[in-house]
Picture 1 (cartoon, rainbow, N blue to C red):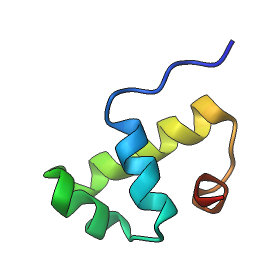
Picture 2 (spheres, rainbow, N blue to C red):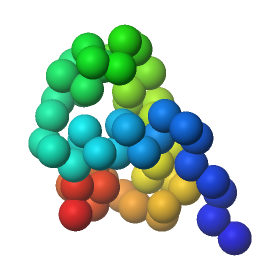
Picture 3 (cartoon, rainbow, N blue to C red):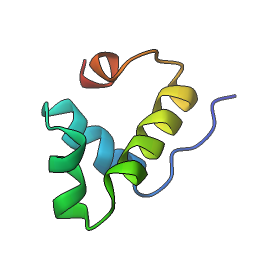
Picture 4 (cartoon, rainbow, N blue to C red):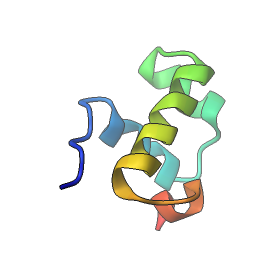
Length: 57
């Protein structure tokens, strides 16, 4: 059973899918770049993906 995404994960995934850098994602969400990286790691783990390019797809 897949783990549920947090409330912030879909926002990060959407911006990642637009091809934005972690810094560009962090600014409108008012979070740090390292927090973006953590969300991206969680997204990949929860959805069983191996790269940010798969998140984009």
